[in-house]
Image: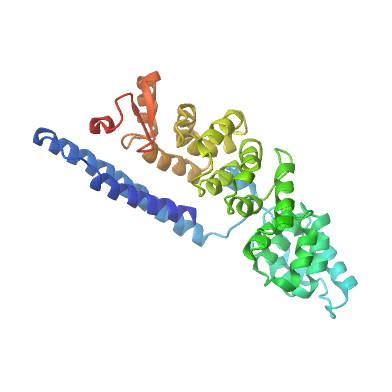
Length: 361
């Protein structure tokens, strides 16, 4: 879980701050110790908040709704369990026509649903159809990719024991159902030249209005193949899920991430504020000052409390010392064009030569 990862990173940062501090003259020692203790205290406070977020998220039912995008006014609507239970389950699972009819009945009963979860009853009902009906499920999914029941089919297939016996079927539908890239990746089929060609084709067809699942990016980026870098870079610049794409590309130390991020920011900064603000954290981590300013504003104004705390946590990593968003605004305004990014520390600071320990304070 990403929240847990952030928590671990905070502890590492705290330890690093203490371990990496250079010896200072005795006159400055007390001041520097106080400053380091303040940083550690801020990090521990953020850690405690993130732990509470984890507890809250575990207790909550995971849903795929616009609430995740900060639309707190959104009212989720689930399917009627009684209506779903009233649909006759096929008495003969080898009767493909009966299975298809059952899928259409489930879809009709789910038509008004706008909040989806892997715990929804449809997932359990679909699971009963078994892997022998994967052909019917994929045929339906390929024509109803964006319908309500498609979410439930996706959840169910993610946990279905799909292997070599189903390989040809999965690869047959991969061009029409890009979400199957996750199945392809788990089975290590993504390295086959013919499959690479399909995945690359899906990536190149992506864009602002043509959704490409992050599983496609994961499968291609995991190969760390420089011949795929141009397509992956273009997707970071112009595709969807920019933040998820960045996270995957960051795992490859040879990918030209800094240059690609700067190019992507030129487009992201003019996009929807939710997507812009999320990517701004990563762009600021590559030294883009404009993106840092966006993060500072988002840390104060985001409508979603979880995202607002995420932006506030990011500022701990990006600024020379712990600051509230309001303090960060004043610091940015005072620094003006004298602010520089220290790639060694991953922090912005006033324009003091890199390596000078006083540049941190």
